[in-house]
Amino acid sequence: MTTSQPPLFQTQDLCISQQNKTLCQQLNLTVYPGQSIAILGQNGSGKSTLLHTLQGLHQADHGEIHLSGQALSKWTGRGVAQRVGLLLQQVKDEMPSRVDDFAMLGRLPHSRFWKSDSEQDRNIVAKALSVTDLSGMSARDVESLSGGERQRLAIAMLLAQDPDLYLLDEPGNHLDIAHQISLMTLLHQHIKSMAKAMIFATHDMNLAARFADKVLLLNTDGSYLFGLRDDILSESSLSDVYGHPVRQAQTDTDYPVFFPG
Ligand SMILES: Nc1ncnc2c1ncn2[C@@H]1O[C@H](COP(=O)(O)OP(=O)(O)OP(=O)(O)O)[C@@H](O)[C@H]1O
Image (cartoon, rainbow, N blue to C red; front, side):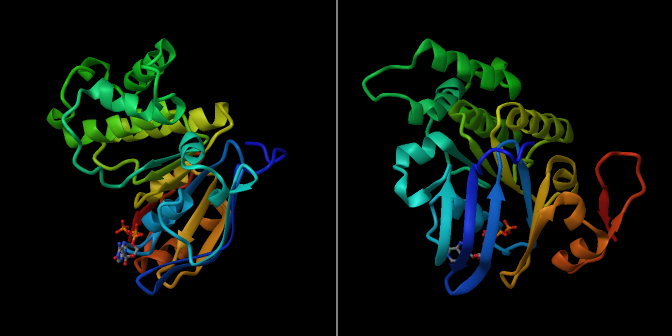
């Protein structure tokens, strides 16, 4: 991780609400290339709404969002789609489509409408399907996939999109532990080696502890804690944010491990 480069992404005094319910007050986030940020908070605390706001899908009440030094509102939709990718928590019902054609949709922000898929596009999609363990299913219909396979396909499409900033809403949803760890490791290594960044919302304290450099704890009143993982994650801060006791396990891992008390 380097902080000598300019930030990839920044929010200044961001305030977000839904139907008059305050979700985020005066949020100041700075994300540098190579950084991984986890968002933790109770159900309904605003994790998904925040991710949607960071991609421009939800309008903030107040504050600024900057992507690569320019206000998000100044980028074209295509410019945002080339730079920011969002993994939704719930994938809407897909149209009937082959798995590889569906993953190819990730290349849309980079393609010219009068050109068909290039060999480079096809190679990128083939690689995305391979690393998500879907190569053997590329000719299958999306509708025939299991929940975990659909989640891997959504991640494959995102990898094909190749954004600078990955916004991931519950990336571990539906995944068995082997795929959870392998895909989070893959994304983590990818953003480190390619100077990209990711912000992921999760209910898994241990995915956050293992894969985040920084953590945002969102409280239900819109207040928050944000900082380096080891400054933020503790038995008391997690117990406070969840309203339930959380204990830290004694382990020899280089990341903390927590469990509900
Ligand atoms: N379109 C909407 N209209 C009205 N209220 C909404 C809408 N979308 C979200 N909300 C409300 O905003 C609050 C935050 O929702 P959000 O989905 O961002 O929370 P979350 O932290 O991601 O929750 P979870 O952990 O359950 O996924 C919730 O109270 C939710 O009911």
